[in-house]
Image 1 (cartoon, rainbow, N blue to C red):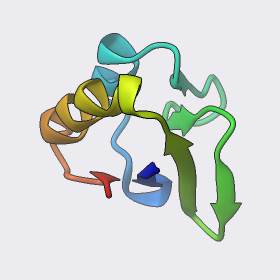
Image 2 (cartoon, helix red, strand yellow; image 1 turned 180 degrees about the vertical axis):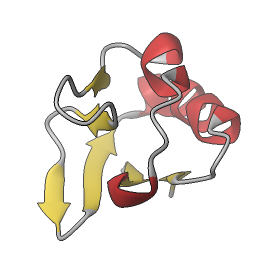
Image 3 (cartoon, helix red, strand yellow; image 1 turned 30 degrees about the vertical axis):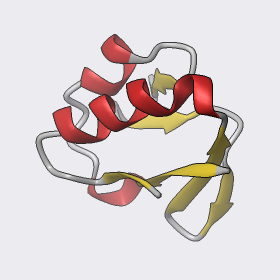
Length: 73
């Protein structure tokens, strides 16, 4: 199973992840950064397993991130 990895501490809050995949992302009202919903946290790195049905869209989100802090492996 693939995983989305989000390095939240480097997020600039551009909102592209939420625009492209709102079922997985929300923007924080507190600091303006993106939150990967239902992700497990390990320090400032958030990891969410994703199924095949979301894989292509997740790759598009990772590619669209202007600071390259979203990875899909």
